[in-house]
Length: 455
Image (cartoon, rainbow, N blue to C red; front, side):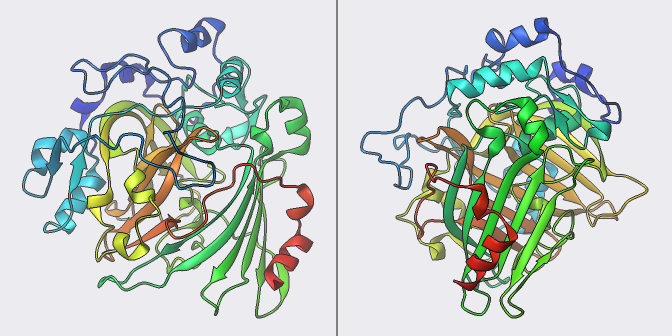
């Protein structure tokens, strides 16, 4: 059970079920985004004891010497560890941890730890994203049963959320630039720490985020983003490829997906690339809708906004992102190398998703802890059909200066029951993201997928 004492008092009035669909907020509520709230809907002020500082705009410029294309250097190299949490003292910090985080200490009592640093509210975005977010506050609405949105563009759709559905749509549509290409991969080590690196070449086109995007035009095209992924290594599965078109109105047109199989040399429609279908080459350690911490249609769950909580979450994980670190330095038995992880205290929105009685998913309940400054899901506790903790997902975020945007550099899903994990987004030995990539619609067609797979 979530510790009620950790919920901020203001959250009580927000604990409403998302079975009802709420509309845009009033102009008076939206005006708070320029006073007591940040443009993203976070509380500008720090907390009572000062351990969470006031928001002052986040990172405004890159560290000296940084050039786009570099791995992003740590803007806070002088910060020291304030304290370390281990299995021996975890009870002292229980109010600042999720049940899943506590379970990791219980599962790996000799090796799991958290190094906690001072809190840096580093999340920042372009001014036009803030401007559009403020506009969205008074115009954006959920469509039928929350399976899509209308009258939104570029910014967070619901910066003053009233329901769990609105909050999870904020995560899905958080700003990550207009388009990018990236290399990197994942590893699903055995209990002993052995792993095979699975490399990916990926392209992401985000029409929703294009500066000047118009809600009416987006509604006509009905496309939120287009995503293409090709396996680059190992050789036995290289060339396997995936294409996804994600829609704005998922009632009108559900997600469309295609796969290219190198053995068959054919492109096939892939309606099962959704929900709890196993993720690409994941060894069964994550579902399709675990990717990016949560993605896809929310229709199989009822969503409840529980309020806010102060929580220790990974933040400013530049050590884990560094090109001076090798994959072998990160991947260890049981969990990633916790010496490379930086934790900070931040306020998070708490959203609980419970599986509807008339549908199915291997996850019966999911609790999402969403950073208030970025709408990035930072931690998710996942429960099975026996109401037992099944998996714990953790996103390790940094600020990508050239955009700017706050986004995960690595996502880790711990399977508590199997005592294994999968690390997604390993890019230390790969080229850095290109946020200036000029992507075109013709590159995101089934024919293009076939060409990509054969290269």
